[in-house]
Length: 331
Ligand SMILES: [Mn+2]
Image 1 (cartoon, protein in one colour):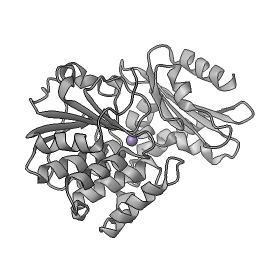
Image 2 (cartoon, rainbow, N blue to C red):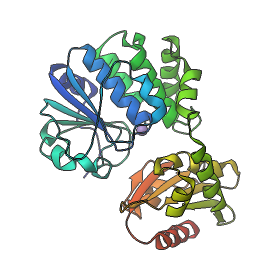
Image 3 (tube, rainbow, N blue to C red):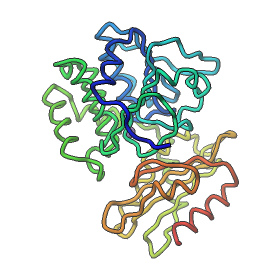
Image 4 (tube, helix red, strand yellow):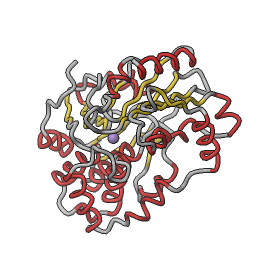
């Protein structure tokens, strides 16, 4: 299936305008961009008297819960039933694997589902897709919807904070190669509208628990450099989580750490699950002439993502997955 837009911004915005009831959701374990995209869109729709459900599959990033203002968040749990709605909007993903808990229910409503995304692959056959893989963050696209749906809404604190968090977190606070002039222009508009970017940085990046540092030590001590120090692999096993008390989601940004070494071009982090869920693999690479396309690497494990940042979930034996990763990195 080709993963590309079939709906213009204007047509998609019109669908939102006429819908009385809208459900907005995103991938499980939302990051700042996924979270910000849902919040900003829901807040704008709410202001237009739309009955909106902001549905999240947990965990929600703890530092971000207080940027939602009065907006009510719905947290998915077993037995949750998707409400009847005129429109279902899935943001920051178009992949079934990332919305697995609601797949069966959403399949019934694909004819009134709209995907808004910036990833290069996805397999949800929604009737409507608005995809811009050049956008640094889904929030860059959502900002255009905000402009289209409602003038002056950047004055709304909830909307502007949510958009800022989205573009800042998906660009590593404007240092990843996906950052483009439009990203900075949007950031400038948001800061001009009153966003306190330093406070948002503290809220999103400096609210970790000590357990995270303990897990980071484990990750770094597992690190192996391969292929003339150009590739770094880290593994976190079940015991690393249980002995440190850290949670699976506390591995966020670990893949960035080995990139401080100049020779390192690609980083892979493999995480063993605590339950019977699949093994998680994260891939990152540095930009440049000989940049490694990590979306291709992830495809070896039925994963995907961006050329510089990708991920996969796979079943199997941890050591076999590790061996396969090492093979690919030294090929
Ligand atoms: Mn994103």
